[in-house]
Image 1 (cartoon, rainbow, N blue to C red):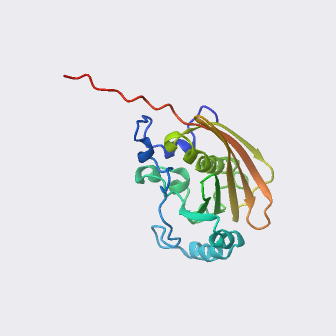
Image 2: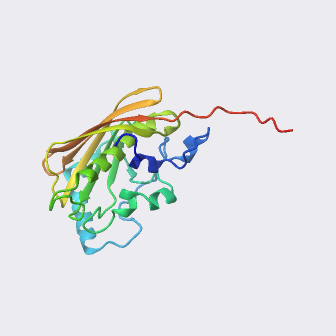
Image 3: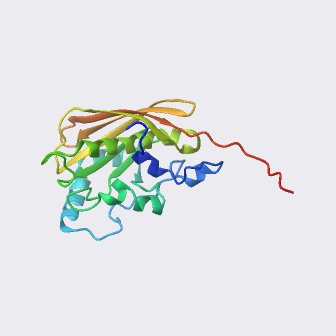
Length: 226
């Protein structure tokens, strides 16, 4: 995926990054919206209602919700309306048998770790009954951005390298947990790791590592106009 447009680039409002870039994108401190899990902008279908009730009873959801070490934010709440409307995961792939519900998203206190819980439906497959590997790579790319961009200059950056290892087939119609952690920051470079696990038994399905690079900011210039 190196050198091509990646999902993390949708998080950037503009290719031209000025001094106010930290105010224009949604990865700075306190950027995400508060959470109302049921209010997702539409009425639930019967399938979505059943999944919502199931979501609330997952052990990982109860554990994170009750822990003082994690705080919940609205998934995709960092996006502008324009970015949200064209986002593959926030918009295009939402619906019954796809990403039926907005994922649940939790950060640790300094945003160096992130956990997302979501359900992957049967219309996201490559082989019948198996979630498409490109879908898993996309989810990991986005997740790695969640722990990298908040720690880069101006809270923004691009995927420079993404390495994905597929450990076990990810079956459709299941809840998964994505765990990401920042490894280190070196100037404008952030290195991070993430993994997708089964929410049922914690089995490792897919893991990835990435390098994100924050673009150089143009220096302030003084107008010479008369």
